[in-house]
Figure 1 (cartoon, rainbow, N blue to C red):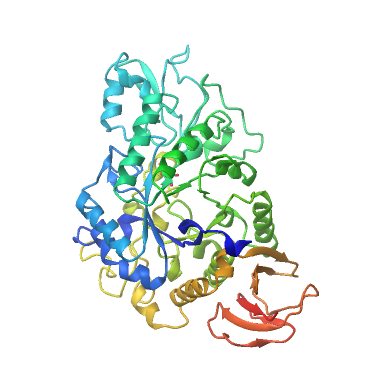
Figure 2: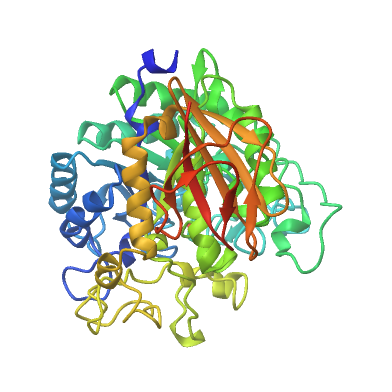
Length: 534
Ligand code: GLC
C-alpha cells in the first residue's frame, strides 16, 4: 500500500538546478557566487522547491566552466570560499532545503596535481591514474575514438611520447577508473563532502566512466548524416555504457548509503532501455535517479510525449523511482524548444508526472535562450566544434529585477542578460498572479497539498488530437491531468470514467474551482488538473 510506504526525501522533492556563474553575484565581478545563492534562499523557499543542485563549484581553471576540476576538496575563488559553502549548506538546511553538488568523476582538469604528475614521466606511479597509450604504428592516435567536444579523443604528449584520452576537452583528461587507487581516491571525495552535510551528488557524464580495456575501435554509425557533429560518425560502443560501470556505481551507492539519506543522480544520455539499468538490480542498487531526459529530447507533440512517458513508466521496476527534466545547462531551454505558451503546459506536465522533477533556474520565468553576439561567446565548444555549438545561450544570468544588472550583478554580467529582462524578471512576475512564475509556484503548492501528485499511480487515458491525458491515483483521491499541446480549443471526454469534478488548476491560472459535469473544454495551449469526484 502506497500510504504505508516510507518515502525518501528525494522521492518527494522538487530539485532546482542552479548554474552558479549565472544565479546571483554578491561581489560585483559579473559572475555568480555562493554568497549570491545564499542570499536567494528565501526566494527558493518561497517558490516551494526542496533541494538545490549546483553545477560544479570546485577549484577549476574553468576551461569548461567548472567541469574541469583541479581540486575536488576546495571551492573555486570565483565562487567564494570553503566557508561560504559551509554557510550556504547550513542556511539551506535551516530552511529545510537539501544541497546537491556536482561530482565530475570521468575526468579532472589537466591542471589537477594528479594529472601533472601523471604526465611528468612514464614510470610515475600516477601514470596509471589516467588513460595513456602508445601512438598507432603511423604515429597517429591509438585508435579512432572521438571527443564529444570535437576531434580525436587522444592528445599527444611530446615529452613522454604517448597519447592521453579525453572524452571531452583536451584540458579534461579521463581518469582511469579501472585503477583501484583512482576508485579509492574518488570515493573518498564523496565521503569528504557527505561528512560536511552535502545531501547528494549529480554525477557528471557517468555513462562514460569506463572504456574498453583493449581500446578497440568504435564502429561506424550507419545512420550518420553530415549535418550531425563529427562525434556521431561512430557508435560509442567501446567508450560508453560499458558493463563494468555497474560495479563502480554499486560502490558509490554503498558509500552514499553509509551516510543515511543521500541521493545519487546520474547524467546519462542513453535510450531508456539502457538508462534504467543504472538503477541497478534489486539487491545491488546503483543510482537513485538516473536522469531521464525524455522530455528534453522528444519532439513536442502529444502523441510522442505520451509514448515517451508510457515507455519509461513500463520499463521501471517497483524499486525504481522516476524523474523528469525539461532543461539543463547543456541544451536549449524549454521555452525555446516548445515556445512560451507550451512552456506552461510543459511545466504542468513536469509537476504532475510520477517522479522527482528537476527545474532549471530561470525556466520558472519562461526564460528563453538568449542570442549571444560572437564576441561575447564564452563556451569553448564555439572553438572546438564550431560557431553556434556553444551552450552560452541557456546559461545567461538570472533576471531578478529591472535594474541595470537585472539584480544579478552590480558589475558587467559575464554573459548578456535576456533582452527583455526589464519585464521578464522575478520582481515583475512575483506581482503578476498569472505569470509563469506564479504558475510554477501554484503547481508546487498544489503538489504539496495533494500527495497523490507525488506518490500516486500514473495511468494514461486515451485522448484525441493534440490532447495528452492521464490520471494520478491513490487511495481516496483521483486527479485527472489534461494538456492541450495544440493551438486550437479542444474538448476532452472519456468513456473510461465519469468525468465529474472540479478544476484545481489551469495553466492560465483563472479556472480554479470550476465544476466539470461532462466534457472538459481546453483553450489553445491550456492544461488543467481536475479533482474527480468519487
Ligand atoms: C556534462 C556536463 C557538461 C560538461 C561535460 C563535461 O555533459 O553537463 O556541461 O561540459 O559533462 O564535463
